[in-house]
Amino acid sequence: MIRVTLELSCSVCSHQQFYLPVNASEGANVRCANCSAFKCKTLDLEKALSAIQRSRLGHHPAAA
Ligand SMILES: [Zn+2]
Image (cartoon, rainbow, N blue to C red; front, side, top):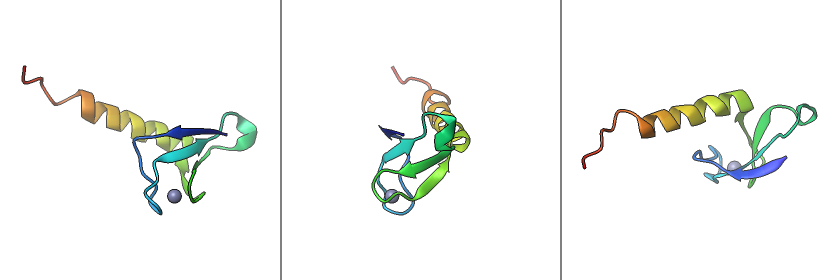
């Protein structure tokens, strides 16, 4: 598992660091690094992160 800080917060403790599995033997569950609650699966996480990036990059024309 690797510990990473994400643009998501744990629904239990609002922590923003999570353990991600690095190979198949560790499964696909993303766990909170603070309280160990399961946050989501890695596939869900990819979707969530890409949605965050889209909302950040798109639909906000620069006001410069
Ligand atoms: Zn937590």
